[in-house]
Length: 133
Figure 1: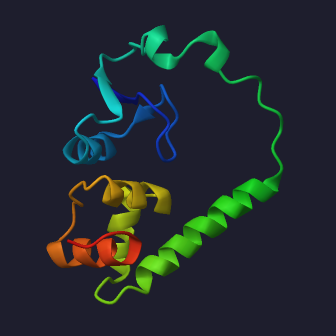
Figure 2: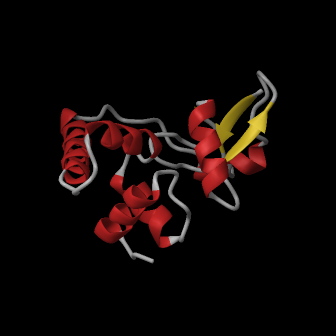
């Protein structure tokens, strides 16, 4: 059995296999998790993948600049997390495993989802990136 993304989320595209650890976190965080459990070799039904109009066209070769921007954004997010009082290097690493992009963390906070970290860390993240309880 494998977990497959049913929507584009973080670095995972719709229909792409998601590691068990990441899927477990999302299942605990979301009422309707963005993953589905499928048998080995089974694929998402075409209606869940989208209509032919929604399927991506042949990709053009991308320049290196977008990758640099994404990497720079990731590094900025990592530095921003490290600047929060009470959050050390190991905790930053744990946060980045669950929320590889700042947008995912902000979205989870805005939706009111419980963050899978110690209460003091969760409160610091909510204070920095969204609402605090």
